[in-house]
Length: 363
Image (tube, rainbow, N blue to C red; front, side):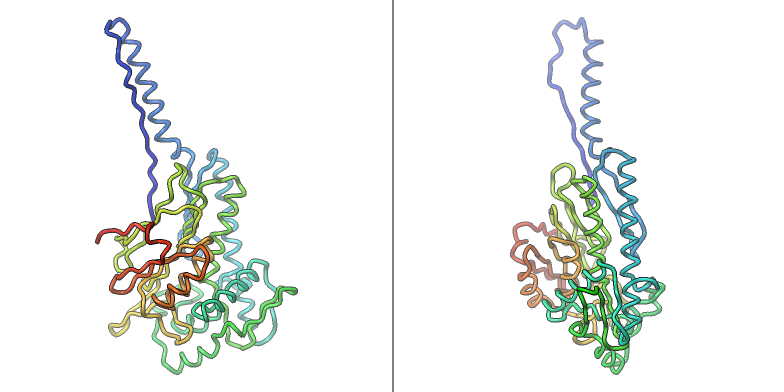
């Protein structure tokens, strides 16, 4: 996560009078002026820029924004975090009362009426599934469960396992986004086969970040940064410069392979290091190819820059599954989207729109 530092200084080149009759008065005045200007320029952004963190959505969410004062900032903070928690309860597969749990529980039985937000995100997920030829599939839940990448207690390492081929083949029969039935008039979602399950984690978090940015904007905020693993940006930094977003080395979390100067954009990275385990010397990760039921192998990470965080979220997953060549072709179809592809050997490929913007870091 990039750190922001705002600084400035002021000087005074006025020469003192040759007659040193008033130095005891002039010097203090000059010192006061210099100090006032110096500290004002150094603290303007610090005083008016507020940063808060909150543990939710299985991660630490950070919001950073400029506000008129502490009380106003705290009111905005409370509204943002309350909305995040409200939406998480609708989308989470770990919350019994969530709409997604209700849809999955009623698979093969009946349609379920859901909230406008869940209906909207599911509809968008199905659209992106179609666009990516199923590389992103919101019905992948049976596979993630099979591999132990989901549990009601979170994602404990001891639940990870390599399934048998027969288990994967059975689960694959339940993964098919084209079977999902949605009714815009009744606002219902129906999974027609028992055992099917929605998994909206690859798109809902981005939607929630976008909603957070909406709240900030509605409160009059012009400059904001929201990081929930997916990063959404409102405007530039308060000093007018672009936000500088680091892209981590997928093989060394302490190292960055690139920096992206961005404003009014969103960024998300899908990597094989996020949720992974090793068995018999082989590394397995959670980004599963819906066509094979196995972890996608061609890439180590994909970082997508897009107009919305929801779009960056879903596109990074799809592009990771597709691999470099097909992923490049896919991203270049999307207006306003760019991507960075990193192979396990740390070979970097970027889409055309980033070639003169990305700042590659020296190894």
